[in-house]
Length: 188
Ligand code: CTP
Ligand code: MG
Image 1 (spheres, rainbow, N blue to C red):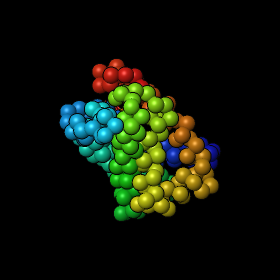
Image 2 (image 1 turned 120 degrees about the vertical axis):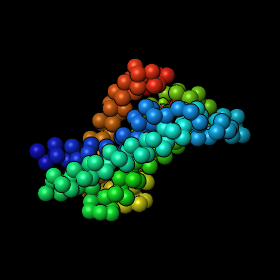
Image 3 (image 1 turned 30 degrees about the horizontal axis):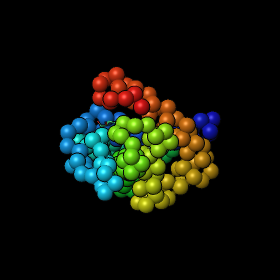
């Protein structure tokens, strides 16, 4: 039972980092973040798949969803098991999760372009984990304790393992939905 709770906590606390990517697919398009510029290697800095609308829309959506979770936990859960932490530290964590997720996503595209890969080309491990890694790293910088108590110490390992298993599956699922909706050119 404790393991199940730890697994569900992992998904609950990483959720503000999972929303921005999906939201970026739905809200993205238009002006690319790199404004079409290339580096000396001849490839785009980030490519046409990373747009300002996706970045800003994704961050706003991720923070909004996180704030709803934050409020729900504060109001409905007297045990504190689902709490993001009291104000303001929980809010900082949510903002770092959402921003870090999309920073990880941009970093992934930057690496793909440096490898000479076209926009939308598949790079399995990087594509699956860039946003989780970015989210946890940025949150570590801002709120180290927040991350280690939830994802490293004790049952936190179970939470971390759960997200490492479930995130690629959800990522794949949402990408197929994005593809069917005509929002993505490829189903990955
Ligand atoms: N998207 C966006 N802005 C972002 C992130 C995503 O507009 N910051 C939108 C783009 O329409 C993009 C789609 O979401 O094509 C899918 O995102 P993703 O799979 O991350 O990008 P790719 O197009 O595969 O590009 P890359 O090869 O750089 O990963
Ligand atoms: Mg992609």
